[in-house]
Length: 261
Image 1 (cartoon, rainbow, N blue to C red):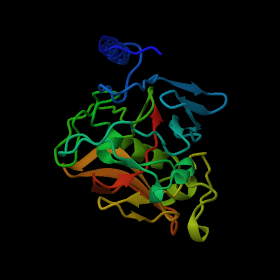
Image 2 (cartoon, one colour):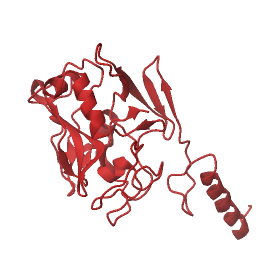
Image 3 (cartoon, one colour):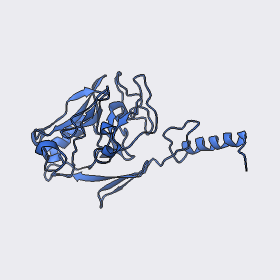
Image 4 (tube, rainbow, N blue to C red):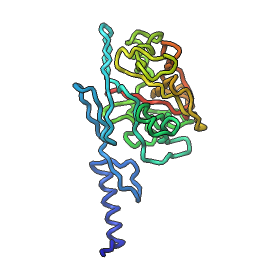
């Protein structure tokens, strides 16, 4: 029986660290980590799919380009379901917290994950420095375009990008009707899904760990702050056809939809 020497163990750890720092990016490159991933994505315009090579998940996409509007953007047609492999960093600076609805992994498959704003922004700077240190209780000096937790080549939308989307699909007063999925919403609150956005009602998770409004509402983080403790998001509800862009606390967990660069 062969025995691995102490020097060999040190060498293995060194090689793993070098691997993390080279062609692969490691989510949590500590002394015990052996997990590496390819920080790339593949967009197939013909099949309308996005493959996130960080974990191999494949998402539907949609090109929203209403005739006569001059608007044309490629959006994810499903909520992001990427799970960080780094423990949360406390202290109001970096946080990678994300959750399955009701902590049920099966829910993540259909509704995606719910992310705190610092996690959505990638405040821990695992994938870019666009929003490094953008935490709960400090003003954020983020880049104009923030990749956030999105796959490479995609980014987290700003408030202005959500405003442009709502205007393009007919205005805020009917945007939810046009963007909501045709199933999955309670009390016949489904939408027409006129542009393939297929918004799903994942609801939210509050800072105390309570989930709410699943099956009846959808919330999507933007990169834009209201002030140091609040940020803007797009919301939709089952009872009406409108979509709005209010603000709320950064420690609430909402859904993420990414838009192609």
